[in-house]
Image (cartoon, rainbow, N blue to C red; front, side, top):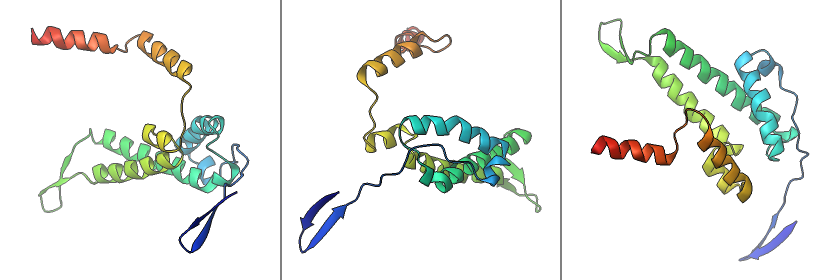
Length: 163
């Protein structure tokens, strides 16, 4: 515990000591295949990074259910062939409501991901750093992966299209 005096008040910084681990998914997550798939995929990653504890069950469930609802919105747009405009009951052109729903869910999902360190910028703000050697190896593996162009290949393509 760290204490410091600021002005006429004393503030104490308390570091919670919650046990990292994968909490049991709530019933609602267990009953939703997309939510459960995201839970099973992401929870081990977060535990390994020491970013998920048993105390995070409700927040992590909310993230996984938001992910599942986003998947549903994507599926609905796929069924509608991704049409951005629809006809209203008065025969006016209106924005497909599933586009707004998808965007709202995506925004919510990104906020949850930030809370759990699942975005690059949130990992920096949490002080999470990939060990230098590991980052270099990771970059090499990505560069050697089939179908993934390297920056050099990309620049060569750009140069050839300009000439």
